[in-house]
Length: 176
Image (cartoon, rainbow, N blue to C red; front, side):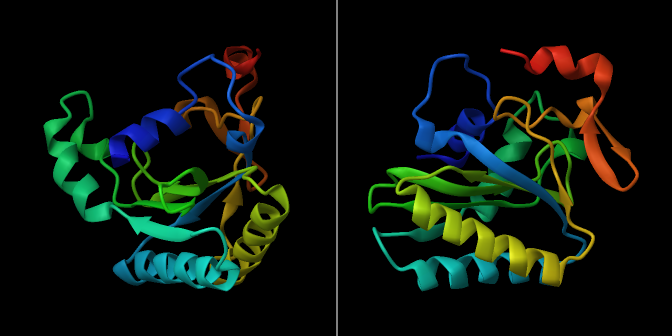
């Protein structure tokens, strides 16, 4: 599956019912200020996927392809172009998306979204382990609010007391 397709699917653009396993259950923003930050995050994803080691779990880093594709997307302003596009999949045929990492429309602020996954128990262990390591490596990482399983658009968020929340006047957009 192409990176652009993955990002579109995860953006919550479709009101159609989705399997419970695809529902976003957690999200966090990590500041990626340097190439080392990027490399550390990708290495962390690889370590946790390898530790799980079941059901063909693997990491696809499509950052280079994404960087090449973005200039061709006329709707994306240069200042919105992302710097990372990585996914953790379960299944040899990419049957189940576990984690998506991207920063399009908010470059340098990587958003990691965690799906409920299938089987949920393994996805929970993967998520909890990753989040613990993320907080140890990036203490300024911020949880992102979820509105009915969808992260609000960057412009619909505000920081209040060091945490993100949905701007109250924008919250109605995310009610189902």
